[in-house]
Length: 134
Image (cartoon, rainbow, N blue to C red; front, side, top):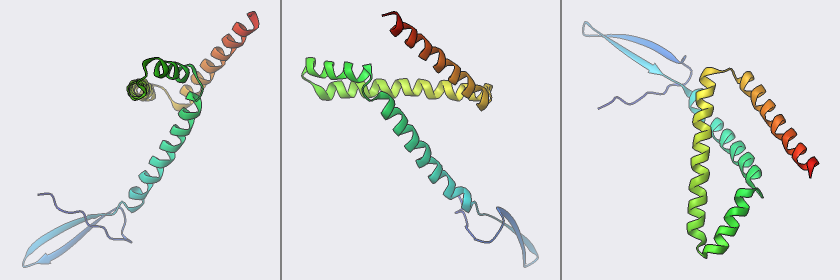
């Protein structure tokens, strides 16, 4: 059975306390990652919220939503269409997360940001070119 973690404020992150009891030395290590315990909650909600808002706004009114609307109208089974569309969005998001994680281990954040910016500029230029030719 694992020992419970002790939390004591005012001590450094890892402290070593020694005491003598009946000619035996007892060593007790107390870890207090108080600031680390509070930070992940804030980081989680900050990342979750910004991701949700960004993806929600990006997907609102795009071709996927229009396709989902048409499929729902044709099939007369909106909950099945919702489940399929939601699963597809989760799967594509998983691919994005896994590829992003893999790239982050091989390239610096600055390089990734520049490459993404250049890719978006190229896509934008191609879209403008396509519209201009119409």
